[in-house]
Length: 217
Length: 217
DNA sequence: GGCAGAATAGAACGACCGTTCGTTTAATGT
DNA sequence: ACATTAAACGAACGGTCGTTCTATTCTGCC
Image (cartoon, rainbow over all chains, first blue to last red):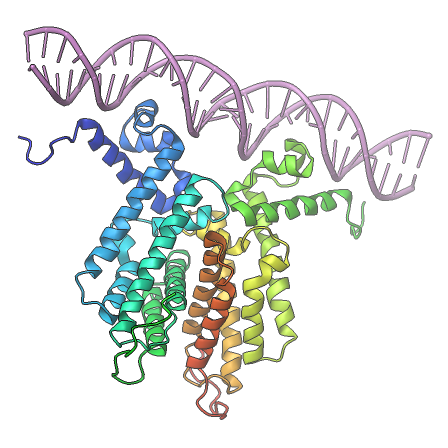
């Protein structure tokens, strides 16, 4: 029967399998390691057969980046939206962030951070795509911080941009320490750092911010 | 019998020029972008002529990593050793760290961090070399933190490992934000984060730690 | 000035890269 | 069951990669 797979022609299914392999590969060795040949071998396709699904290698890389980004949102943001806004949600976001590659069964690190490091100095479509998504991520995180300010859990003067900057730092240090040095304590360090970050910006008393956050950028 | 060759024979001079170009290239596009062909073109040598200076591409990459590491120490640590130990030196280290690529006239980011990101999941001699140097860096930084504890500027219970972890995070976030998003405010953010980190671990009063730092690990 | 040895050049190699093209197989709609 | 079209294949292309080998040029020492 065809339960819900209405238009899923064979091709799209194959394409999904290719992207699965591509994301895994990008997680392990970066997006520059995505070559037509090795990916074809991994998926059991011929080079030309695989190639036909994307018009070029660059398009394949972009598609893999999109898929990675989609999974990131799915694993980090969607679950956090079910948590009450404010500090709880912020904590959920941070927690999901540092564990999502493992949860998503990626054998390497976060593909988005891998892409950032790879293309931060390399002009081209990949750099543009990566920068755009990172900016979007920073914006969404800043919103979540602001919600914690509005709820009165963080003090009114909190600089959301600075807060997000430091969250990024903790996540990067976590991945860095974990993968390169094999330090299992990295996650605990990151969480400890986050709590210290929260404490530094916590509202002194239980008073909600009275003013509706004037300078919101 | 050529006695101790004190004078740099022509070859070593050429080798130095090659490494200069290699470090620059690694800063801009990573160590995997170091190819014999492009590097030969950059230096005006033939492929085989350049190749002869290193026995293999991997040896060239290792040599470039060593040179990068040497310059890092020269630009970050050596100047900081002239600063009185304790918080001042720690601040100098952090300050030098986030600006050294620019000071060293590298057009890209810090080669050591680039290497970390590239090889954190790639087994082989490069990964080993990178991990070793990063561990060394972390150890030296922890020593500097401990000196600030011993001098009584940081409180006795300070977890040097955690402190270094968070320093790493701030530097990584700084590079990340600066290069990918082109945010000029990244450096100020990093410095602000560092001051907050110091404050959180500052000794409550002006009392030096009386005990000589028992659990120094 | 001449000579040994270091330094560099040049051509060629096999392997892999992304891409193209014509053909063949498999899935789909009727 | 059959015609149509999507999907995958296989061979070939020009290019670059790291590496090897041989030949040439240059340098430093007597």
